[in-house]
Image (cartoon, rainbow, N blue to C red):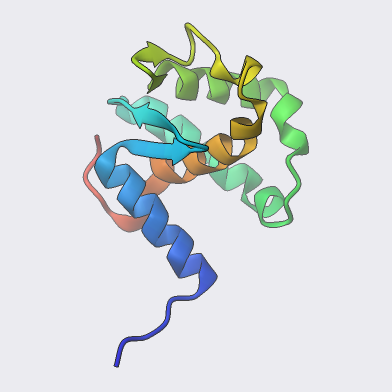
Length: 121
């Protein structure tokens, strides 16, 4: 008899799968996570920890803060769409509907090695 996963466990399994595949598919578009340095990943994880309570309450007011913009720059430098770095060609000008989901997924995927002991990529 298999145990049914809680929504939180399901989300963690999805993050793990994306981390292992390096690809998050959002609205049919494949966002590919490339290698990150320990320092980059640590900065994203630290910020994610800081805003975790806001995310839990679906409060995304932080996305216009200067500190988030620095973290977003790190993320966009290390993720591609169709081979182009998000830092070079921001797809969210065209695909705004991907932005929030992408941001939340990126926090989880980049932080995953710190939360589950996975090997860094």
